[in-house]
Image (cartoon, rainbow, N blue to C red; front, side, top):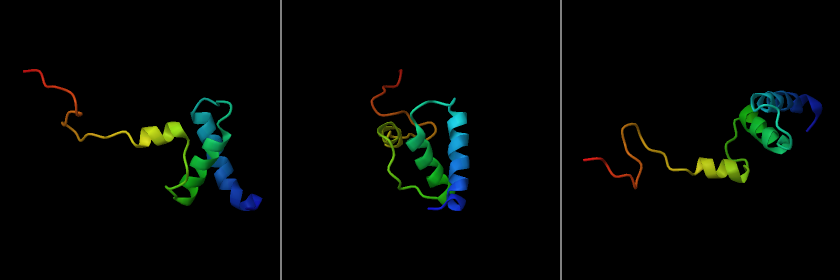
Length: 72
């Protein structure tokens, strides 16, 4: 990929880095996220922490998560 194609990804990765408080050692994660956003991709490999967050079950509004008992 040449520099012209990388520029929007590089710019977005830098924005992500700044939004997260400029952490060290997350270049690959920021690049992958930026590339996904710029190209509209959703199936790029993610880090383990991102995978775990993505697989967490979601509940709809008003629905209690499983395992919680209501107070009666």
